[in-house]
Length: 175
Image 1 (cartoon, one colour):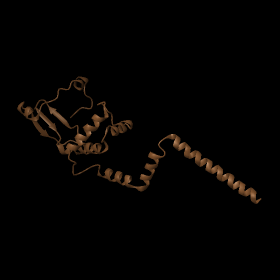
Image 2 (cartoon, rainbow, N blue to C red):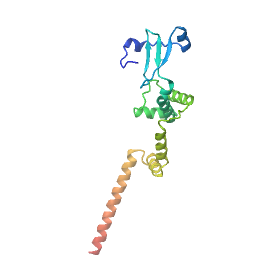
Image 3 (tube, rainbow, N blue to C red):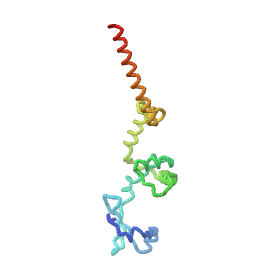
């Protein structure tokens, strides 16, 4: 099992392992285990057995990568997700991250049991709502700066004052 704490000598120097065929030639055997975690990978040094879960167990990861591929199309999407602390960009350029997710998403087939199907449905339903489209249009086109919001409140305040003055003028006329 992959430990939660990995000593720094293993974290800093990655010597990647070779292919499965080369490992077999080095007398390493492969064994399927039923783990509850994606991190259920272990190597039994004494027996020379590399144990890991089958690829079907990685369906949640594949679903997540496809979900992120849907969200990320451009560097602007990456910047937005980084601003909201959803992503942490270690690659520097947002375009590189966007290309990475897009290439990954194009090469992955969506599993039959899509864990995020209900989220897709709910988001699409929300976006298709006329009220939400109207509010989004107002925010983007008319209330995109603090000054626009302040000017609307000032105009409303002036309308209320004008209405109040009109009411008092009419009341004074009839007295």
